Amino acid sequence: MSGETTRGASAERHDVVVVGAGPTGLVLAGELALGGVDVAVVERRTERTVVGTRARGMHARTLEVFDQRGILERFLAEGTVAQTQGFAGIRLDIADFPSRHPHGLALWQCHTERLLEDWVLERGVPVRRGVSVVDFTEHAEDLEVALDDDSRIRARYVVGCDGGRSTLRKRAGIEFVGFDPTTSWIMGEVRLEEPRLGLRDEGGGIGPAGRGRFGVVLPEPALQRGDDPTEDQLRGAMRAAYGTDFALREPRWIARFTDMTRQAASYRRGRVLLAGDAAHVHPPQGGQGLNTGVQDAVNLGWKLAQVIAGVSPDSLLDTYHHERHPVAARVLHNTRAQVALSTPGESHRALRELMTELLAMEGPRKHVAAMLTALDVAYDLGGGHPLVGRRMPDLDLVTPEGATRVATLFHRAQPVLLTFGERAFDLVRWPRVRLVTAERTTGWELPVLGAVPETEAVAIRPDGQVAWAGDLDDPSLPQVLSRWFGSDATGGREAPGR
Ligand SMILES: Cc1cc2nc3c(=O)[nH]c(=O)nc-3n(C[C@H](O)[C@H](O)[C@H](O)COP(=O)(O)OP(=O)(O)OC[C@H]3O[C@@H](n4cnc5c(N)ncnc54)[C@H](O)[C@@H]3O)c2cc1C
Image 1 (tube, rainbow, N blue to C red):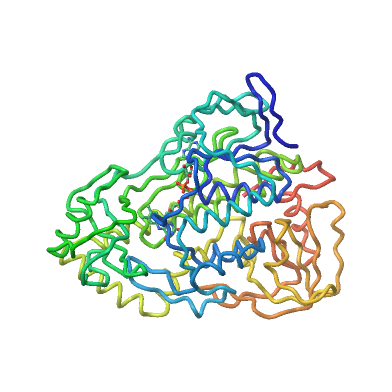
Image 2: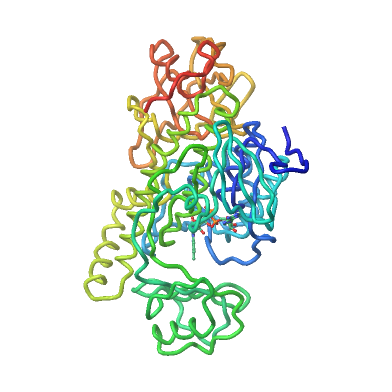
C-alpha cells in the first residue's frame, strides 16, 4: 500500500509515520520497509546536514546490526576503522573481543545519515522534507498526524524519532524524567596558530581535523543553553582553558552540548512510540547516543512490522519498552559517571587517575568496553541458556546451500531457527521463521562471559537477539516461536510474555 493523495482532511494514509530523518528514524524506516510495512518519514529540515557537528562514529554493535542488513560495506567504505571507544576519554581497546567487528568506525554523523537515507530511498520509502509534525489525534483504529503545512496523515502508528525536544513525546504527555544541565561544552572546527594538542584532564581538548584545521571541544566557563553558540563564546572557552585563543579563525561550524540527562518514562502510549533521542538524552561522552537510537530502531522495527501484518498482537510492542528502557537507563548512568570524571578539580583528577589504572586491567576494561559498545546487552527474555536475550555470535556456517555466516541470514530481517545436526523440525505453524540447518561449528563465545555451551538449535529474532537456545525436543520451543513470531495455529494472537 502506498500513500494516496486526495483532497480533504486526511489526504495521505500509511501504516506507520516516522517523525524525524535522523539516524534513528532512518533506520526504523528501513527496518519497517524490510518488514513489508507502508511507512513514510516526515522531516522538519529541508536539506540533509552536510557538516559533522554531532556523532563522530559508531561502535561495534551498530556495525554488527548494519552487517546483519547487508549495508555495512557502505559505511566501511567511507569511514575509518579504529579503536574509537573510550570512557571519559580513557581509550578502551576491544581488538580481543569475540566480534566480527572488534573496533569502532570513525564517520561523521552527516555521512551516516546520508548513507542511511540512500538505503531508505532505495527501499521506496517516501521521505517528506521541510514539514514538521505539530500534533496528533488518536482514534480507535488509527491516528491522525497534523503537519505545519496544514496537511494531515492518517496512520496506524506514529513513531517519534524527532530528537531530544520531541514534539511527539510532549503531545503524548510522556514525562521526560531526569536532570537539568549543569555544564555546557562548546565545540567547533576552526583554524588555529600552533595550538596545544591533546586531551585536557577536565575533558575536551584540541585535535587535528585535517587540511590544517582543528577540532575543539571545551567546557564553557558558565552553563549556556542556546543552540546557536557564537565564535566569541568559543574564543572565551579557549581563553578560559588555555589563556589564549590560538588566533582562532574561519570556523566551519560551532556547536554546543550539555550534560542534560533525561529519559522518557514510557516508550509507548497507545499508538505513539518513541525512539532514539526522543526517548533518551545524555551528554555525548562515550559516543553512545546515535548507537542507542539505531539499536532502539532495530528492536522496534520487526515487532511493529509483525503487528501491522497481523501475525502478532499489539502487546508485542510493549516488549520494546521493557527491553530498551533499561538499556538507555544504563547509558544515562554511565555518561553521568563520565561527566563526573571529566569535571575539573583535584579529587576528580585523582579519581580519573585511579580509573585509568583500573581500565588498563583486563576485567574492568572488558566490562566497561562491552557496556559502551552495547555488545553486552542482555534482554530479560526469561533466562535459560546464557545466549537467551543476548546477541547471537556471528558464527561461520556451512549449510547445504554453501558457506555463510549468521549475520548474512538476517539481510531480510526474518526470524531464523538455526539447527545443528540431523534432526528435523517442522515450522509449518510458523511460516515467517526461516529454518537454516548447518554443520556444527566453533566460535560460541560472548564478550565478557566467554565461551557458552553449544546447543542443537537457536531461535534468533530479526534484531539478532536470541529468543531461545536448546534441544529441538525442548517443549518450550513451540511456545517461544509463537510468542515472538506469531503462528498460524493461534492466528498469531498469543501475547508475548517477558
Ligand atoms: C556534540 C555531540 C557529539 C555526539 N557524539 C556522538 C557519538 O560519537 N556517538 C554517538 O553514538 N552519538 C553521539 N552523539 C549523539 C547523537 O548525535 C544523537 O544521539 C543522535 O543524533 C540521535 O539520533 P536521533 O535520530 O534519535 O535524533 P536526531 O539526530 O536529533 O534527529 C531528529 C530529527 O527529527 C527532526 N525533527 C524534530 N522535530 C520534528 C518535527 N516536529 N517534525 C518533523 N521532524 C522533526 C529533526 O530535524 C532531526 O532531523 C553526539 C551528540 C552531540 C551533540
